[in-house]
Image (cartoon, rainbow, N blue to C red; front, top):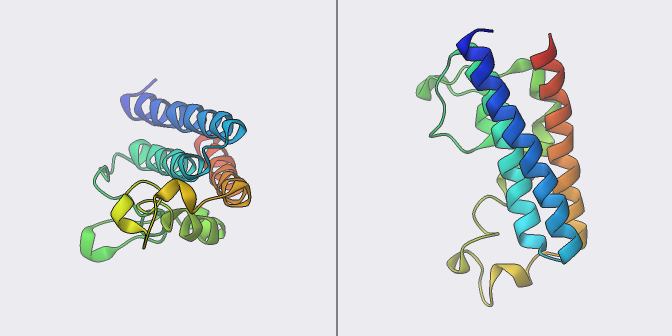
Length: 138
């Protein structure tokens, strides 16, 4: 096995484990953390593709940018994941406000997310992981 495949596999394993943790947190009612970890899971999965390609993107956290690409930043994009762009946009929206108190107008982040939000984020992450798994298998 080559080094890039091994690294891609490590990132994808972490993506799957993170998704599993998010599902466990849903059962405990920690909905803001479910949303954030679902985003992280999808990010790890997408970065597995970049690892396989040998393209460093560790400092990019926007799933939309990772999928669409950004020539100014030297990010090539992943055209095979364009059908996941709506899922990526949804998950991008929960990257910061699920965690930071100063990202919500009052109260705390955990008060702004419910079971429906958590389920929607889990579905979005699952869609991305499923698509990435197909890519890594080819």
